[in-house]
Image (cartoon, rainbow, N blue to C red; front, side, top):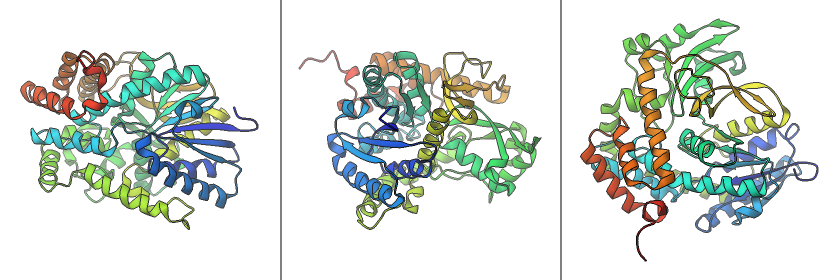
Length: 443
Protein backbone atom coordinates (compact mmCIF):
# COMPACT_ATOMS: atom_id res chain seq x y z
CA UNK A 1 0.00 0.00 0.00
CA UNK A 2 1.33 3.46 -0.85
CA UNK A 3 2.04 5.66 2.13
CA UNK A 4 -1.25 6.83 3.68
CA UNK A 5 -3.40 5.41 0.90
CA UNK A 6 -4.08 2.87 -1.79
CA UNK A 7 -2.32 2.27 -5.11
CA UNK A 8 -4.43 1.01 -8.03
CA UNK A 9 -3.00 0.01 -11.41
CA UNK A 10 -5.41 -0.10 -14.35
CA UNK A 11 -4.15 -2.11 -17.33
CA UNK A 12 -5.80 -0.72 -20.44
CA UNK A 13 -5.96 2.71 -18.85
CA UNK A 14 -6.53 4.40 -22.22
CA UNK A 15 -9.96 2.76 -22.45
CA UNK A 16 -13.04 4.91 -23.00
CA UNK A 17 -14.42 3.37 -19.76
CA UNK A 18 -11.69 4.94 -17.58
CA UNK A 19 -13.64 8.15 -16.76
CA UNK A 20 -16.32 5.98 -15.11
CA UNK A 21 -13.63 4.23 -13.05
CA UNK A 22 -12.22 7.61 -11.96
CA UNK A 23 -15.73 8.86 -11.10
CA UNK A 24 -16.34 5.71 -9.02
CA UNK A 25 -13.10 6.18 -7.09
CA UNK A 26 -13.79 9.89 -6.50
CA UNK A 27 -17.26 9.30 -5.08
CA UNK A 28 -15.95 6.59 -2.72
CA UNK A 29 -12.84 8.51 -1.64
CA UNK A 30 -13.89 8.77 2.02
CA UNK A 31 -14.03 4.98 2.37
CA UNK A 32 -11.44 4.14 -0.31
CA UNK A 33 -8.50 6.58 -0.09
CA UNK A 34 -6.80 6.00 -3.45
CA UNK A 35 -3.67 8.15 -3.48
CA UNK A 36 -2.19 6.74 -6.70
CA UNK A 37 -4.05 5.61 -9.80
CA UNK A 38 -1.69 4.32 -12.48
CA UNK A 39 -3.17 4.16 -15.98
CA UNK A 40 -1.17 1.77 -18.17
CA UNK A 41 -1.37 1.19 -21.90
CA UNK A 42 0.70 0.08 -24.88
CA UNK A 43 2.45 2.20 -27.51
CA UNK A 44 -0.54 1.97 -29.92
CA UNK A 45 -2.81 3.30 -27.19
CA UNK A 46 -0.52 6.16 -26.12
CA UNK A 47 -2.62 8.98 -27.61
CA UNK A 48 -5.84 7.69 -26.03
CA UNK A 49 -4.04 7.19 -22.71
CA UNK A 50 -2.95 10.83 -22.68
CA UNK A 51 -6.42 12.10 -23.61
CA UNK A 52 -8.12 9.98 -20.92
CA UNK A 53 -5.37 10.70 -18.40
CA UNK A 54 -5.77 14.45 -18.80
CA UNK A 55 -9.55 14.14 -18.37
CA UNK A 56 -8.94 12.01 -15.23
CA UNK A 57 -6.68 14.74 -13.82
CA UNK A 58 -9.32 17.40 -14.48
CA UNK A 59 -11.96 15.23 -12.78
CA UNK A 60 -9.74 14.73 -9.71
CA UNK A 61 -8.93 18.45 -9.56
CA UNK A 62 -12.63 19.40 -9.76
CA UNK A 63 -13.45 16.90 -6.97
CA UNK A 64 -10.57 18.26 -4.89
CA UNK A 65 -9.30 14.84 -3.78
CA UNK A 66 -5.56 14.12 -3.30
CA UNK A 67 -5.42 11.34 -5.92
CA UNK A 68 -2.34 11.31 -8.17
CA UNK A 69 -2.93 10.14 -11.75
CA UNK A 70 0.13 8.49 -13.30
CA UNK A 71 0.27 7.63 -17.02
CA UNK A 72 2.75 5.02 -18.22
CA UNK A 73 3.58 2.49 -20.92
CA UNK A 74 5.70 0.59 -18.36
CA UNK A 75 3.38 -2.04 -16.88
CA UNK A 76 5.91 -3.29 -14.33
CA UNK A 77 6.41 0.21 -12.93
CA UNK A 78 2.64 0.51 -12.48
CA UNK A 79 2.31 -2.91 -10.82
CA UNK A 80 5.11 -2.35 -8.30
CA UNK A 81 3.53 -2.30 -4.84
CA UNK A 82 -0.06 -2.02 -6.14
CA UNK A 83 -2.91 -2.95 -3.78
CA UNK A 84 -5.44 -3.55 -6.56
CA UNK A 85 -5.00 -4.17 -10.29
CA UNK A 86 -7.89 -3.78 -12.71
CA UNK A 87 -7.75 -5.12 -16.27
CA UNK A 88 -9.85 -3.64 -19.07
CA UNK A 89 -7.72 -4.36 -22.12
CA UNK A 90 -8.51 -5.38 -25.70
CA UNK A 91 -5.71 -7.28 -27.43
CA UNK A 92 -5.66 -6.11 -31.06
CA UNK A 93 -7.84 -3.06 -30.28
CA UNK A 94 -11.24 -2.56 -31.95
CA UNK A 95 -9.91 -3.61 -35.37
CA UNK A 96 -9.53 -7.14 -33.96
CA UNK A 97 -13.11 -7.04 -32.71
CA UNK A 98 -14.31 -6.05 -36.20
CA UNK A 99 -12.63 -9.20 -37.57
CA UNK A 100 -14.15 -11.27 -34.74
CA UNK A 101 -17.61 -10.15 -35.85
CA UNK A 102 -17.23 -10.03 -39.63
CA UNK A 103 -15.38 -13.31 -40.36
CA UNK A 104 -17.95 -15.67 -38.72
CA UNK A 105 -20.78 -13.78 -40.47
CA UNK A 106 -19.14 -14.59 -43.83
CA UNK A 107 -19.88 -18.24 -43.00
CA UNK A 108 -23.43 -17.55 -41.81
CA UNK A 109 -22.53 -17.77 -38.10
CA UNK A 110 -23.14 -15.22 -35.33
CA UNK A 111 -20.24 -12.80 -34.95
CA UNK A 112 -20.14 -11.31 -31.47
CA UNK A 113 -17.59 -10.00 -29.01
CA UNK A 114 -17.99 -12.68 -26.31
CA UNK A 115 -20.20 -15.39 -27.87
CA UNK A 116 -19.51 -17.92 -30.61
CA UNK A 117 -16.37 -17.74 -32.76
CA UNK A 118 -15.77 -14.04 -32.05
CA UNK A 119 -15.73 -14.53 -28.30
CA UNK A 120 -13.55 -17.61 -28.77
CA UNK A 121 -10.87 -15.66 -30.61
CA UNK A 122 -11.02 -12.82 -28.12
CA UNK A 123 -10.27 -15.42 -25.44
CA UNK A 124 -7.35 -16.89 -27.44
CA UNK A 125 -5.74 -13.45 -27.77
CA UNK A 126 -6.48 -12.30 -24.22
CA UNK A 127 -5.73 -15.24 -21.91
CA UNK A 128 -1.94 -15.41 -22.57
CA UNK A 129 -1.60 -11.64 -21.92
CA UNK A 130 -3.54 -11.86 -18.63
CA UNK A 131 -1.39 -14.83 -17.56
CA UNK A 132 1.71 -12.65 -18.15
CA UNK A 133 0.20 -9.89 -16.02
CA UNK A 134 -0.60 -12.38 -13.23
CA UNK A 135 2.99 -13.65 -13.34
CA UNK A 136 4.31 -10.07 -13.01
CA UNK A 137 1.91 -9.47 -10.10
CA UNK A 138 3.35 -12.49 -8.28
CA UNK A 139 6.74 -10.76 -8.41
CA UNK A 140 5.76 -7.10 -7.98
CA UNK A 141 2.53 -7.03 -5.93
CA UNK A 142 1.79 -10.57 -4.65
CA UNK A 143 -0.85 -9.37 -2.17
CA UNK A 144 -2.83 -7.35 -4.72
CA UNK A 145 -6.29 -8.33 -5.91
CA UNK A 146 -6.68 -8.65 -9.69
CA UNK A 147 -10.13 -7.37 -10.68
CA UNK A 148 -10.76 -8.49 -14.24
CA UNK A 149 -13.39 -6.95 -16.47
CA UNK A 150 -11.71 -7.91 -19.73
CA UNK A 151 -14.10 -10.07 -21.76
CA UNK A 152 -14.85 -12.92 -21.95
CA UNK A 153 -14.65 -12.25 -18.21
CA UNK A 154 -15.64 -15.71 -16.94
CA UNK A 155 -13.19 -17.57 -19.20
CA UNK A 156 -10.33 -15.15 -18.49
CA UNK A 157 -10.93 -15.47 -14.73
CA UNK A 158 -11.03 -19.28 -14.95
CA UNK A 159 -7.80 -19.37 -16.98
CA UNK A 160 -6.08 -17.22 -14.34
CA UNK A 161 -7.32 -19.33 -11.43
CA UNK A 162 -6.31 -22.60 -13.14
CA UNK A 163 -3.05 -21.66 -14.85
CA UNK A 164 -1.44 -18.86 -12.81
CA UNK A 165 0.16 -18.89 -9.37
CA UNK A 166 -1.66 -15.66 -8.50
CA UNK A 167 -4.99 -16.76 -7.00
CA UNK A 168 -6.34 -13.39 -5.82
CA UNK A 169 -8.45 -12.99 -8.96
CA UNK A 170 -12.10 -11.94 -9.31
CA UNK A 171 -14.09 -11.41 -12.51
CA UNK A 172 -16.73 -8.70 -12.79
CA UNK A 173 -19.46 -7.99 -15.33
CA UNK A 174 -22.02 -5.24 -15.82
CA UNK A 175 -24.91 -7.55 -16.82
CA UNK A 176 -26.08 -8.37 -13.24
CA UNK A 177 -26.13 -4.71 -12.16
CA UNK A 178 -27.95 -3.71 -15.37
CA UNK A 179 -30.55 -6.41 -14.70
CA UNK A 180 -30.92 -5.29 -11.08
CA UNK A 181 -31.41 -1.62 -12.05
CA UNK A 182 -33.97 -2.57 -14.73
CA UNK A 183 -35.96 -4.89 -12.43
CA UNK A 184 -36.01 -2.23 -9.68
CA UNK A 185 -37.46 0.24 -12.20
CA UNK A 186 -40.07 -2.30 -13.33
CA UNK A 187 -41.14 -2.81 -9.72
CA UNK A 188 -40.89 0.92 -9.02
CA UNK A 189 -38.66 0.46 -5.97
CA UNK A 190 -35.15 1.67 -4.98
CA UNK A 191 -32.36 -0.67 -6.12
CA UNK A 192 -31.16 -1.26 -2.55
CA UNK A 193 -34.53 -2.77 -1.59
CA UNK A 194 -34.13 -5.49 -4.22
CA UNK A 195 -32.31 -8.82 -3.84
CA UNK A 196 -31.74 -11.02 -6.89
CA UNK A 197 -30.38 -14.57 -6.73
CA UNK A 198 -28.06 -15.09 -9.71
CA UNK A 199 -26.66 -18.37 -10.98
CA UNK A 200 -24.93 -19.47 -14.16
CA UNK A 201 -21.89 -18.38 -16.15
CA UNK A 202 -20.69 -15.01 -17.36
CA UNK A 203 -23.04 -13.85 -20.14
CA UNK A 204 -25.06 -17.01 -19.50
CA UNK A 205 -26.64 -16.25 -16.14
CA UNK A 206 -30.17 -16.46 -14.80
CA UNK A 207 -32.06 -14.68 -12.04
CA UNK A 208 -33.37 -17.61 -10.01
CA UNK A 209 -35.48 -15.47 -7.67
CA UNK A 210 -36.45 -11.85 -6.92
CA UNK A 211 -36.94 -10.71 -3.32
CA UNK A 212 -38.35 -7.47 -1.94
CA UNK A 213 -38.68 -7.24 1.86
CA UNK A 214 -38.11 -10.99 2.11
CA UNK A 215 -40.97 -11.87 -0.27
CA UNK A 216 -40.53 -13.41 -3.71
CA UNK A 217 -41.72 -11.23 -6.60
CA UNK A 218 -40.39 -13.59 -9.29
CA UNK A 219 -43.70 -14.41 -10.98
CA UNK A 220 -44.61 -10.71 -11.12
CA UNK A 221 -41.29 -9.81 -12.79
CA UNK A 222 -41.63 -12.69 -15.29
CA UNK A 223 -45.04 -11.28 -16.22
CA UNK A 224 -43.57 -7.79 -16.63
CA UNK A 225 -40.55 -8.76 -18.77
CA UNK A 226 -42.72 -10.62 -21.28
CA UNK A 227 -44.31 -7.29 -22.19
CA UNK A 228 -42.30 -6.08 -25.27
CA UNK A 229 -42.30 -2.56 -23.80
CA UNK A 230 -40.74 -3.71 -20.50
CA UNK A 231 -37.76 -5.81 -21.42
CA UNK A 232 -34.36 -6.24 -19.82
CA UNK A 233 -31.95 -5.07 -22.52
CA UNK A 234 -28.29 -4.23 -23.06
CA UNK A 235 -27.10 -1.54 -25.47
CA UNK A 236 -25.09 -4.07 -27.49
CA UNK A 237 -27.78 -6.77 -27.93
CA UNK A 238 -30.71 -6.67 -30.35
CA UNK A 239 -33.78 -6.12 -28.09
CA UNK A 240 -35.91 -8.97 -29.44
CA UNK A 241 -38.96 -9.61 -27.22
CA UNK A 242 -39.18 -12.95 -25.40
CA UNK A 243 -41.93 -15.42 -26.22
CA UNK A 244 -44.27 -15.07 -23.24
CA UNK A 245 -45.20 -18.74 -22.84
CA UNK A 246 -41.54 -19.79 -23.09
CA UNK A 247 -40.37 -17.46 -20.27
CA UNK A 248 -43.30 -18.51 -18.09
CA UNK A 249 -42.46 -22.16 -18.70
CA UNK A 250 -38.77 -21.51 -17.95
CA UNK A 251 -39.80 -20.01 -14.61
CA UNK A 252 -36.60 -17.98 -14.15
CA UNK A 253 -35.26 -14.80 -15.78
CA UNK A 254 -32.58 -15.18 -18.49
CA UNK A 255 -29.95 -12.48 -18.94
CA UNK A 256 -30.17 -10.52 -22.23
CA UNK A 257 -27.24 -12.55 -23.63
CA UNK A 258 -29.41 -15.69 -23.61
CA UNK A 259 -31.03 -14.33 -26.77
CA UNK A 260 -27.97 -15.61 -28.65
CA UNK A 261 -29.00 -19.16 -27.72
CA UNK A 262 -32.81 -18.96 -27.56
CA UNK A 263 -33.22 -16.59 -30.53
CA UNK A 264 -30.22 -17.56 -32.68
CA UNK A 265 -32.06 -17.39 -36.01
CA UNK A 266 -33.49 -13.89 -35.49
CA UNK A 267 -30.21 -12.50 -34.09
CA UNK A 268 -28.25 -13.97 -37.00
CA UNK A 269 -30.67 -12.48 -39.55
CA UNK A 270 -30.29 -9.06 -37.94
CA UNK A 271 -26.49 -9.34 -37.81
CA UNK A 272 -26.32 -10.43 -41.47
CA UNK A 273 -28.36 -7.36 -42.46
CA UNK A 274 -25.93 -5.11 -40.57
CA UNK A 275 -22.95 -7.03 -42.00
CA UNK A 276 -24.11 -6.37 -45.56
CA UNK A 277 -24.40 -2.64 -44.76
CA UNK A 278 -20.91 -2.64 -43.21
CA UNK A 279 -22.35 -1.72 -39.82
CA UNK A 280 -21.56 -4.50 -37.37
CA UNK A 281 -21.69 -3.63 -33.66
CA UNK A 282 -17.88 -3.39 -33.61
CA UNK A 283 -17.92 -0.75 -36.36
CA UNK A 284 -20.64 1.21 -34.52
CA UNK A 285 -18.54 1.03 -31.33
CA UNK A 286 -15.45 2.26 -33.20
CA UNK A 287 -17.43 5.33 -34.29
CA UNK A 288 -18.79 5.85 -30.75
CA UNK A 289 -15.25 5.63 -29.36
CA UNK A 290 -14.00 8.18 -31.88
CA UNK A 291 -16.73 10.62 -30.82
CA UNK A 292 -16.09 9.96 -27.11
CA UNK A 293 -12.38 10.72 -27.44
CA UNK A 294 -13.21 13.96 -29.26
CA UNK A 295 -15.36 14.87 -26.23
CA UNK A 296 -12.62 13.81 -23.81
CA UNK A 297 -10.15 16.18 -25.52
CA UNK A 298 -12.21 19.22 -24.47
CA UNK A 299 -10.08 21.00 -21.82
CA UNK A 300 -13.30 22.27 -20.18
CA UNK A 301 -14.70 18.75 -19.65
CA UNK A 302 -14.09 17.66 -16.05
CA UNK A 303 -16.83 15.03 -15.49
CA UNK A 304 -17.75 11.68 -17.04
CA UNK A 305 -19.90 12.58 -20.08
CA UNK A 306 -23.39 10.97 -20.30
CA UNK A 307 -22.59 9.78 -23.86
CA UNK A 308 -20.37 7.05 -22.35
CA UNK A 309 -23.48 5.00 -21.50
CA UNK A 310 -24.11 4.43 -25.23
CA UNK A 311 -20.85 2.48 -25.35
CA UNK A 312 -22.57 -0.63 -23.97
CA UNK A 313 -20.46 -1.13 -20.85
CA UNK A 314 -22.26 1.22 -18.48
CA UNK A 315 -21.69 0.40 -14.78
CA UNK A 316 -18.68 -1.88 -15.45
CA UNK A 317 -16.30 0.44 -13.64
CA UNK A 318 -18.81 1.18 -10.91
CA UNK A 319 -19.09 -2.56 -10.24
CA UNK A 320 -15.28 -2.76 -9.97
CA UNK A 321 -15.09 0.22 -7.59
CA UNK A 322 -17.84 -1.26 -5.44
CA UNK A 323 -15.94 -4.55 -5.21
CA UNK A 324 -12.64 -2.86 -4.34
CA UNK A 325 -14.35 -0.80 -1.60
CA UNK A 326 -15.94 -3.93 -0.13
CA UNK A 327 -12.66 -5.90 -0.15
CA UNK A 328 -10.76 -2.99 1.41
CA UNK A 329 -13.37 -2.29 4.11
CA UNK A 330 -14.42 -5.91 4.79
CA UNK A 331 -18.02 -4.88 4.12
CA UNK A 332 -19.43 -8.41 3.92
CA UNK A 333 -22.08 -7.26 1.45
CA UNK A 334 -23.47 -9.37 -1.39
CA UNK A 335 -22.27 -8.85 -4.98
CA UNK A 336 -22.62 -10.92 -8.15
CA UNK A 337 -19.14 -11.98 -9.25
CA UNK A 338 -17.22 -14.47 -11.35
CA UNK A 339 -15.43 -16.77 -8.92
CA UNK A 340 -14.39 -20.40 -8.45
CA UNK A 341 -17.54 -22.45 -7.99
CA UNK A 342 -16.51 -24.34 -4.83
CA UNK A 343 -19.91 -26.00 -4.54
CA UNK A 344 -22.08 -22.92 -5.06
CA UNK A 345 -23.76 -24.60 -8.06
CA UNK A 346 -23.84 -28.21 -6.97
CA UNK A 347 -24.20 -29.78 -10.43
CA UNK A 348 -21.08 -28.06 -11.83
CA UNK A 349 -17.44 -28.97 -10.93
CA UNK A 350 -15.82 -27.14 -8.00
CA UNK A 351 -12.86 -25.82 -10.00
CA UNK A 352 -14.78 -23.99 -12.76
CA UNK A 353 -15.67 -20.29 -12.64
CA UNK A 354 -19.34 -19.40 -12.25
CA UNK A 355 -21.29 -16.15 -11.93
CA UNK A 356 -23.08 -16.17 -8.58
CA UNK A 357 -23.84 -13.99 -5.57
CA UNK A 358 -20.92 -13.76 -3.14
CA UNK A 359 -20.33 -12.42 0.34
CA UNK A 360 -17.43 -9.99 -0.09
CA UNK A 361 -14.92 -10.07 2.77
CA UNK A 362 -11.37 -8.76 3.24
CA UNK A 363 -10.16 -12.31 2.58
CA UNK A 364 -12.03 -12.38 -0.71
CA UNK A 365 -15.48 -13.30 -2.02
CA UNK A 366 -17.30 -16.34 -0.62
CA UNK A 367 -19.72 -17.81 -3.18
CA UNK A 368 -23.24 -18.38 -1.82
CA UNK A 369 -24.79 -21.78 -2.44
CA UNK A 370 -27.70 -21.93 -4.89
CA UNK A 371 -27.98 -25.72 -5.16
CA UNK A 372 -28.56 -27.38 -8.52
CA UNK A 373 -29.29 -25.47 -11.70
CA UNK A 374 -32.78 -26.48 -12.88
CA UNK A 375 -33.02 -29.11 -15.63
CA UNK A 376 -34.33 -26.72 -18.36
CA UNK A 377 -31.11 -24.65 -18.27
CA UNK A 378 -28.54 -27.09 -16.93
CA UNK A 379 -27.88 -28.69 -20.32
CA UNK A 380 -27.05 -25.39 -22.01
CA UNK A 381 -24.86 -24.20 -19.12
CA UNK A 382 -23.02 -27.55 -19.11
CA UNK A 383 -22.42 -27.34 -22.88
CA UNK A 384 -21.04 -23.80 -22.67
CA UNK A 385 -18.86 -24.74 -19.70
CA UNK A 386 -17.52 -27.71 -21.70
CA UNK A 387 -16.70 -25.29 -24.55
CA UNK A 388 -15.06 -22.81 -22.13
CA UNK A 389 -12.80 -25.45 -20.54
CA UNK A 390 -11.67 -26.66 -23.99
CA UNK A 391 -11.19 -23.09 -25.28
CA UNK A 392 -9.07 -22.11 -22.26
CA UNK A 393 -6.94 -25.21 -22.84
CA UNK A 394 -6.49 -24.20 -26.50
CA UNK A 395 -5.51 -20.63 -25.53
CA UNK A 396 -2.87 -21.85 -23.09
CA UNK A 397 -1.39 -24.66 -25.21
CA UNK A 398 -1.80 -23.22 -28.73
CA UNK A 399 -3.27 -26.56 -29.83
CA UNK A 400 -5.02 -26.37 -33.22
CA UNK A 401 -6.97 -29.56 -32.47
CA UNK A 402 -8.28 -28.24 -29.15
CA UNK A 403 -9.22 -24.95 -30.81
CA UNK A 404 -11.23 -26.79 -33.46
CA UNK A 405 -12.86 -28.99 -30.83
CA UNK A 406 -13.85 -25.96 -28.74
CA UNK A 407 -15.52 -24.32 -31.75
CA UNK A 408 -17.42 -27.52 -32.59
CA UNK A 409 -18.71 -27.80 -29.00
CA UNK A 410 -20.06 -24.24 -29.10
CA UNK A 411 -23.81 -24.30 -29.96
CA UNK A 412 -23.50 -21.15 -32.10
CA UNK A 413 -21.17 -23.00 -34.53
CA UNK A 414 -23.42 -25.29 -36.51
CA UNK A 415 -21.07 -27.65 -38.39
CA UNK A 416 -17.50 -28.90 -38.29
CA UNK A 417 -16.53 -27.90 -41.85
CA UNK A 418 -17.46 -24.26 -41.27
CA UNK A 419 -15.79 -24.43 -37.85
CA UNK A 420 -12.53 -25.45 -39.54
CA UNK A 421 -12.85 -22.75 -42.22
CA UNK A 422 -13.57 -20.06 -39.59
CA UNK A 423 -10.67 -21.30 -37.45
CA UNK A 424 -8.20 -21.21 -40.34
CA UNK A 425 -9.25 -17.76 -41.54
CA UNK A 426 -9.34 -16.23 -38.06
CA UNK A 427 -5.99 -17.72 -37.04
CA UNK A 428 -4.45 -16.05 -40.09
CA UNK A 429 -6.31 -12.76 -39.50
CA UNK A 430 -5.14 -12.58 -35.85
CA UNK A 431 -1.71 -14.17 -36.39
CA UNK A 432 0.17 -11.24 -34.77
CA UNK A 433 -1.68 -11.78 -31.48
CA UNK A 434 -1.65 -15.60 -31.44
CA UNK A 435 2.03 -16.59 -31.21
CA UNK A 436 1.14 -19.77 -29.28
CA UNK A 437 -0.42 -21.24 -32.46
CA UNK A 438 2.57 -20.42 -34.68
CA UNK A 439 5.47 -21.22 -32.37
CA UNK A 440 6.74 -24.07 -34.57
CA UNK A 441 6.99 -21.96 -37.72
CA UNK A 442 10.49 -21.15 -38.98
CA UNK A 443 11.75 -17.59 -39.25
